[in-house]
Length: 101
Image (cartoon, rainbow, N blue to C red):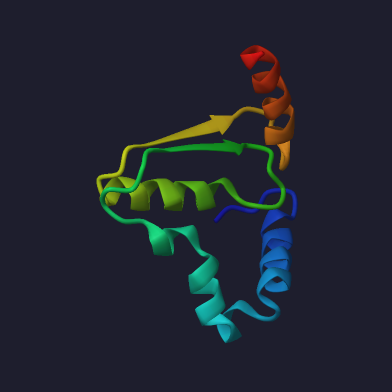
């Protein structure tokens, strides 16, 4: 993974808070919350959107999920959203809701 404005450290800190301790000591919980654990042939199609300025979760995490899906022959699309940070989906949801009405 590449370093992006401290993102790796933030990602590790967030992950350790999520699982309640060091990742290597909480391997079973890490496995259970990792979406790649649940990738299987026959899964529904995935659309993965990830901001290229996300300082919490490195883009490589979405690439790992995308590659696992493709290896399982699941239809998947990965879109890198230019200049988007963590939480950009909230703005996207507003735009989508307005367009549906």
